[in-house]
Image 1 (cartoon, protein in one colour):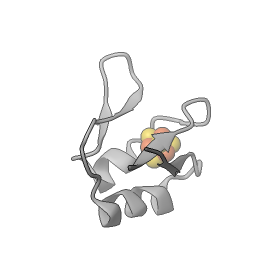
Image 2 (cartoon, rainbow, N blue to C red):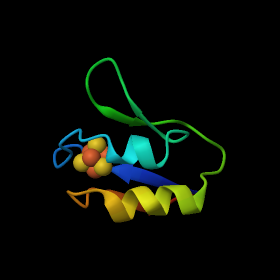
Image 3 (cartoon, rainbow, N blue to C red):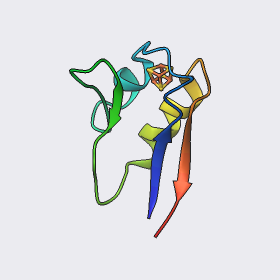
Length: 64
Ligand code: SF4
């Protein structure tokens, strides 16, 4: 399964990803961006977040 991952040490919590793709990205109570667990991620929406992240810290991880 392909899933988005965030390099949290680079994330500045600007919430651009949350705005681009609120079904997938969430600002949690601890103040970190979280990726919601999904069986399958909406590619277009995640790609938009990847493109617009000012820190370039979102990427796709290929995994099983
Ligand atoms: S767009 Fe990038 S820097 Fe901004 S909150 Fe999302 S992951 Fe963090």
